[in-house]
Amino acid sequence: MWKALLWDHDGVLVDTEKFYFQANRELLAEVGVELSEADYRRYLLIAGTGAWHLASERGCSAAEIADLKHRRDERYRELLLVEEVTIAGVAELLAELQSQVRMAIVTSSRRADFDAIHSRTDLTRYFELILTREDYRLSKPNPEPYATALERLQLPASECLVIEDSERGLSAAKAAGLTCWVLPSALTRGSNFAAADRRFDELSALRRSLLASLQPQ
Image (cartoon, rainbow, N blue to C red; front, side):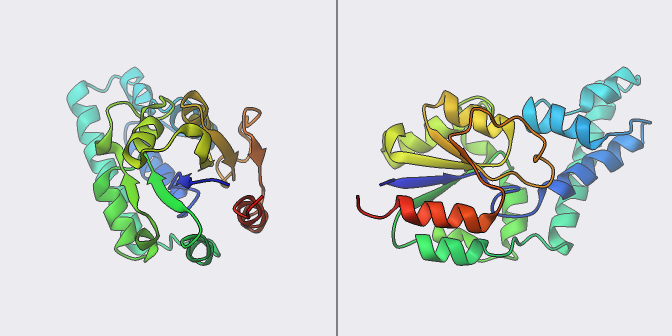
């Protein structure tokens, strides 16, 4: 039986990844860069480096890129406050799990974005620990975010299960010595999840396996 579930956030608990892609694409388009879904997956969802080097290659200065990033963040937050971000079945699943297992969110989202998202949801009440980008030094695919969660929860990796949707999240979890189940989002379905302990294509299938894994052996 798992003692804790460590959830990724964007693409797993809320449908926000497409809006971050949109914000990045819109701002990069201003300097002549056409950000494709393939580029987004490669640079943000796998490597975790961002795509601003594409603007640099177009001659943008560091100051211009800093301005683009700032306006990207503003545009993303604007979308989060008006677009639908809920994923059907997530709230019900979390309510079902809450009395059976400890739960945490380990996300690369900034706190301001996270708070904007959850100003319109009631999901945070299900979690005893929430780690955002400001809570650790190195982001996924580095294992530090998950190592930090284990330290805060005072649990060994063997007693925790990670739910992820991206390659870099999977890499971070495995590097931290954790079991990781993957539920791909629309933007990550074509990714390489060979290292995952299990993969699910539907939330309902993940739900069944989670509930079964929490039953006394």
